Amino acid sequence: MLRHSLLALLGCLAPLFAADGFKATPDHAPRPGVPTGRLIPMPALQSKIFPNTTRDWWVYVPAGYKPDGSAALMVFQDGRNYHPATGTWRVPIVFENLIARGEMPVTVAVMVNPGDDSTRPANPAKKAGGPASNRSLEYDSLGDRYVRMLLEEILPEVEKQFPVSKDPALRAISGSSSGGIAAFTAAWERPDQFGKVHSTVGSFVNIRGGDAYPALIRKTERKPLRVYLEDVSGDLDNQYGNWPIANQQMHAALRYMGYDVHFEYAEGYSHGGAHGGSVFPDALRWLWRKETPRPAIVTKGDLGGDMTLHRLLIEGEGWQPVVENLGFGDALCTDAAGNFYFSDLRGTAVGVYKIALDGKKTKLSDEALSGMKFAPDGRVYGCQGAKKRLVAIDLATGALEVLATEVQPNDLVVTAGGLVYITETGKKQVTLINPRTKAVTAAAGGLANPNGITLSPDGGTLAVSEHRGGAVWTFRVNADGSLDAGAPTMAMRRPVDPKGEFNRQEPPPYLAAASGDGMTADEQGRFYVTTALGIQVFDPTGRLCGVLAKARGDRGEVSCVLSGPGRSYLYVGAGAGIYRRKVQATGVAPAGGLKN
Image (cartoon, rainbow, N blue to C red; front, side):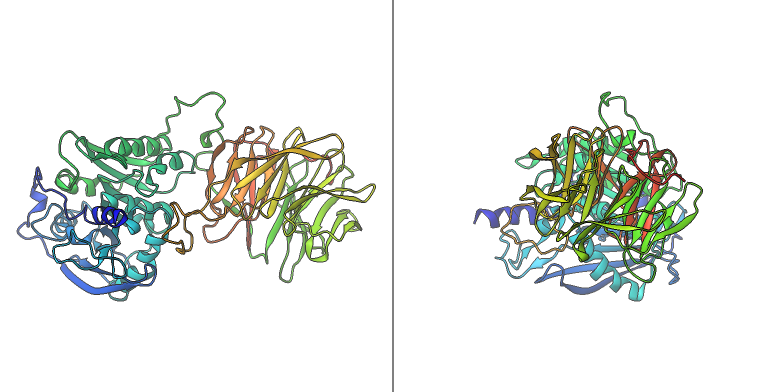
């Protein structure tokens, strides 16, 4: 019964919001001559993403709306609270007044209630009993399941009647309390869909792991979001956390990363919509303002040795395409001069390619390689798991030598002495191959599907990423090539409930595998690994420096390397394309490589 009592409390926080202290402004009242729009109750939605739940929702269509896809969009959680003309928000009235004065664009408002779950015991806090609210599960949980419900179930119904803009800069999302963190999570997970966030008394506390956000924000490449936060000094302080402190932490983290963020904080008041509703018109003016501010990044508190994202990324330098329309680009590598190499594994143009510093692209071999590195003898060593062999290719002549058979290499790294370590994903092991003696030895086992592999700049540490686990393992490399001192020293961030299939009995936050894949290192000792969340970067001690955004949000990334001029461009293979961006780092130079 304790669990159901907790859910009942969390599910009815929104209706308990007090209006004490609400101060209506002229923008909260209808004005003569201001055109009015339409508030349309929509048919109750039976969700498939949240099975057995039903939710009420409304659409407000302002005067001046045109069905040409130019209108902006704003989605509100706890929709029942936002449309009444005598409430603390009064969305239709406020919208009408601000739109009429040009202080916000013509904007369609979608106001959505949390779902009621018919499979769980009735909520005793409801006046008429009835199904339990699904509010906390939907709003407080991290991950993309709630935003998927909006994008896959709610907004398509809106679009059937009222097309709106697809530009994320013209799409905002709002909520209060748990609805506030729900709004932020939706935009955080899908910044390609929502570019503006409005959160009042947001529950960025440990109800279902939301207290992690300030730390996540500081170690994630800045997303294209504009964020308005509001809170009050008398907000909640209970077993889940302190709301005022949590919102201050959110503001500090967003400001540290250079976000366009505003924090409205008031003394007094309590947990509710009184203050947030009072300043709602001003919040909308700030949120929809046309100004494009320059990021203001303050790093005076950074320690000298901390390898933060600010010391890796370059402001204004994003991902740029290098090669597109590939079958599947993989096996990225570099030579000492910075010429870039890759393999296309599928389609009609399978082979190994070079892109020289002058941009000229040349095909060097017809072989398909899933991993490729230059060796001290000047050849590239490559993985051919389907053929169960490791090969060496002279890229100048095309001559191929088989170095080992009856192995299934996924990726590889070559030491300065010419030894080769491969990951055999299916065998869950790292295998050592001596090309001179043809000896093949199991070097380390028991890993959760090892995939990417690289060496530290001095060659003394071997790093291996797990595809089905959550760690990058490191090993000490001994003089004879043997490995010891293995430990999971780098904890990769993992997606939260990526398919919405978690068991309700599991503890939060329902983490999936990290999908660790290709790896590389730089001369400063940082390790880079492609994962389901993007490229994760670790410092030499194994601490997470941060996560770089995917080059393409809809494609997994499988391989990375620092190459190009000065070996200061980070390249990534993302399915049909290869992309790069300039960074403040220098890639480790291999001992061999073509001379021109």
